[in-house]
Image (cartoon, rainbow, N blue to C red; front, top):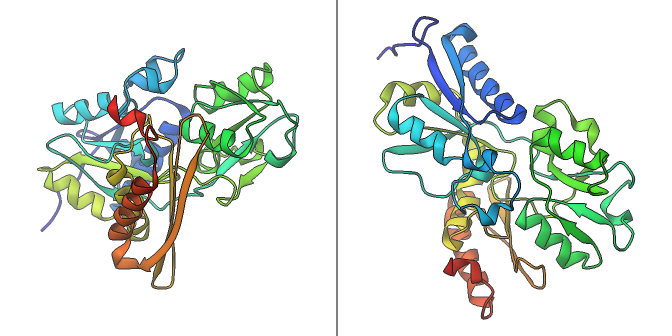
Length: 316
C-alpha cells in the first residue's frame, strides 16, 4: 500500500517546544523523515508551541504543576489537529499519553550521561566544600545532596543558553546539562566532561527523542515506522516500566538506566528523598525480552524498602 506523502503544498506539521534544543530535535526528526522518503525539507513545517514549563521560569517545576509541564500544550495541538506529530525529549514525558494519542517511535538514543559544566572547576569531584551548584532537576539536586551534603544547591531554570549565562553571571559556580542536548547543539565543548552513571545515574529515558502521533493516523504511523529505532525502544521499555510502577513525574527524584550486552539487559534504578537524605538503589539483569518485567519488579522492590514519608510527593 502506498503512503500519501506530504509535500510543500501540504506539509506534515511537526510540533515542538521553541528552545534551540527542542528545535534541533524537531529538525533531526524532519531530516530523517525527508531522507527516508526522498522528500524536500519543505514538505515539513516545524510548529513552535510554548508550554507551561517554558512560560513560568521564576519558580521550581514542582510548584507549577507536576506531570506534563513540557508536553500538555503540544499534545492538545496534536489532539486538535493543528499538528501531525509531536517531538519530545523522552525524559520529559509522563508514562501515560492522553486518550487518542500514542508514543511508539524513538530516534536512536544519544549519550545518556549528565555533563558537568563549570568555568571554575574541572570536575564534580573537585568542587570545594560549600560550592554553589545550580540545577532545576529534583533528581540531580537529590543526588548531589546525597553524595555531597556540603554543597549549596540553588534553583537554576532555563534552556541551555540561559543556564550558561547564569554561570557567567556567577549565580552558581557549576551546573549540569544532558550530554545528549549538548551534542545535538554542537556544544559539547562547553562541558568539562560527561559524568559516569556510577557517580550520577541519569534520568529515565535521558538522551532519547520520542515522536507522538494520533492513534488513528495510519499514514503518519507508516511514515514514522521508517525512522523508528528498535534498540532504543528496548531500553526505554525497561526504564519507563520502572518509572510507571513508581508513578514517577517531574516531581520525583528517580533515576534509571538500561543497557544491553548481548542478550542480557542490565537495569540500574535509584529513588531518593527530595532533600537527598536517603537513597535506595538496585542493579539487576534479565533477558532482553524481559526488560519491562524487570523494571516493574525493581520498582516494587524499592517501594518495599522505602520507609514512611519517603514518597510524600505521591500524596500531592
